Length: 373
Image 1 (cartoon, one colour):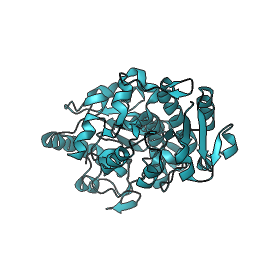
Image 2 (cartoon, one colour):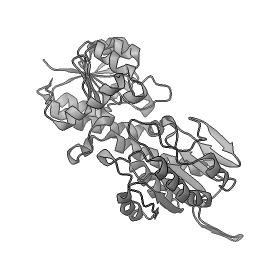
Image 3 (cartoon, one colour):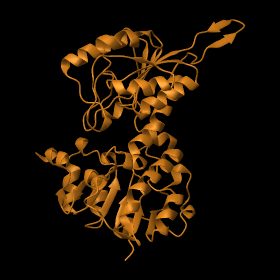
Image 4 (cartoon, helix red, strand yellow):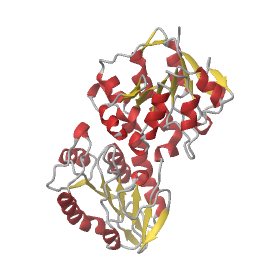
């Protein structure tokens, strides 16, 4: 019997993305699935209900969840949403259980098989499923625009009858996908760009986009291509190196994160106080505690004349494109599991086993099991 894929409206404040856009819904329907969508699920991405052709539109979330064999969401579900889901159903979403361990118990109580999209392994075969990379593209781009909009300085060099304005100097901390997009955007705006990352192998990528790489003789490469947490001694070396570069910068964009842990504190209050008045820090890791110790989530503060912006959920701010990319990632993830409209899960597949958080009433991932200890 064909499965029903349910697409609810996101209820988290400020979340404007939708997990599945109409073009992807049509492709899932062609695989034999029934599609159910909550009314107005895509309205914040300018997608009307009638754009979801051949989908059944539900007027209430509870009725939608009761119909869904597979639920696909952007944000982690609330306890109420989990309670509304069918027992034994499948949930595909971002989960981030390290910040909310109790969610695993709730999922297990309903025997929900949950695939956490942020846990999809970073292997070549899974690149097309990598929601972290696609959403980080939005984050890096938007962070630079926020920086420019928060400042009273030009980004590019500007020659006028009154003289020449020098180009702004931008430092990007963290050269992952968000950092690389921030480098590219800052360069397109005409700034001089420096970049820093604890992973030496990112040097070539940063330089290929026109940034000057700030080199530190520490190899901070961790598992899965991510950075590892630095030791106390390494953190001191890092701060000593970065202090001068931060002080010389007009703009600092931070994107450095360690999976499953709070964001590393890279910029101290003392380092901020060495910056020029009017300088701007945009901390894209505010939701994870921030890379700057003065950052306040969803606030813009001024410390000693330095503007510090802590935006959260930046990907949602460009919901049209972010939703399109998210939906295509999900399509590439779920398509191999669908055979003639039915769900067939291959538990020998690394992509499946690594991303499965819960299954059959048990926490599936070994690392997540430790959260209940």
